Length: 443
Ligand SMILES: *[C@@H]1O[C@H](CO)[C@@H](O)[C@H](O)[C@H]1NC(C)=O
Ligand SMILES: *[C@@H]1O[C@H](CO)[C@@H](O)[C@H](O)[C@H]1NC(C)=O
Ligand SMILES: *[C@@H]1O[C@H](CO)[C@@H](O)[C@H](O)[C@H]1NC(C)=O
Ligand SMILES: *[C@@H]1O[C@H](CO)[C@@H](O)[C@H](O)[C@H]1NC(C)=O
Ligand SMILES: [Zn+2]
Image (cartoon, rainbow, N blue to C red):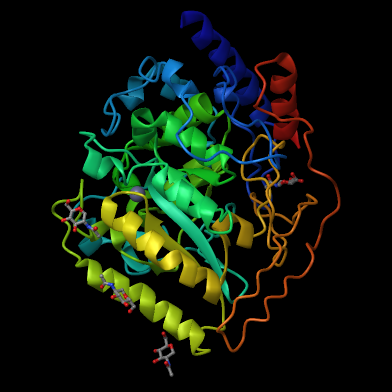
């Protein structure tokens, strides 16, 4: 542990030294997080995408059982109260340019009534703002640019139950993952948070191995704008660390719990390598009462009718402006029931894919050996610049029952160089990896 920590500090010193030379025009440069370089890679997970051969199905893998997911982590499902003095967090904070983080106090219960109506910090919870007021970070991703597209996102996984009983166990993973596989091998974004992964690392490994795109949904699932800077860093750091340890990947995408984000949190996220993915349609499924959510106040029938309304709207030809990123959860028997009930109809009315794919993000991890298919319509990359990777395009199953959906998907634009299994900046615990990270930093 001491050895690992000093290695991490050495890396951090290196990165921090390089930081001074980075340009400050345009979006802030992003870099692969050097502070995760010494996390050992797990076995039992894929190291690249695409994979040839069958994707897994049936029971979950068992390789994750050997992992120690306690040592070096804070308590689960709690904000990290001692973040400011936690050596791991202190080290990461040194890599952040705090002049690029708006100097605003954490929000509180009463901030909503005292906050300036001009929304100086683009606080989503206040008014749904998704375009930062600072110019050095890109807008949030909040829809699919191409009409007739449905970006599938499932939050709060991986799914498990305590206590495990035969009745509720049948809704735990691999239930949804088997269902997606059986329905046209549907891929989705899975927004995992660290504390949940601890309970079901095997399900997380199955999610990655199935070809879903994993984003980080923090460590303990707090309202992020209510936290101190150190606590915000801790939420990203421990969420990313857990994902790296269990899955061997380093996501460049994140989703704020409750959508609670402002420019302070965005700026920290961005400098930790992360782009924010919001949504424009919300099922509110998390409020449906069910196992684990006994206090839910939204009748199942109401969420059900909401989704039915969106589909009807599209079928009537009244949803032709833009595609959607849709918020769903793998959280309870009720959310899984809703997700599975509607998926086949959604697939008929819309072209379905992960929200990252409809935004043409082929490489959602710092490990460049993962290149996922994209829709090929908007030509942006994870960091907000033009797509520069030649990724396969998602073959369009023409959405039927619409008056407008042509189903045709154009070729990727702006493709200029191959991604492939080149230099995976953080996937190897080697000097090479560190040098690659430094090079990426300077660029
Ligand atoms: C985004 O990535 C591209 C290619 O990887 C790179 O050329 C560009 O400088 C990056 N931009 C930022 C803001 O990091
Ligand atoms: C869900 O909506 C569909 C379509 O409107 C309807 O047929 C079904 O009965 C609804 N299910 C529930 C449980 O409300
Ligand atoms: C079309 O959709 C909009 C927004 O959802 C809704 O307000 C309007 O009533 C719909 N029009 C029809 C003809 O369904
Ligand atoms: C989920 O489980 C609860 C408790 O067992 C049950 O009352 C509820 O009907 C279930 N919800 C669905 C949608 O099946
Ligand atoms: Zn959540």
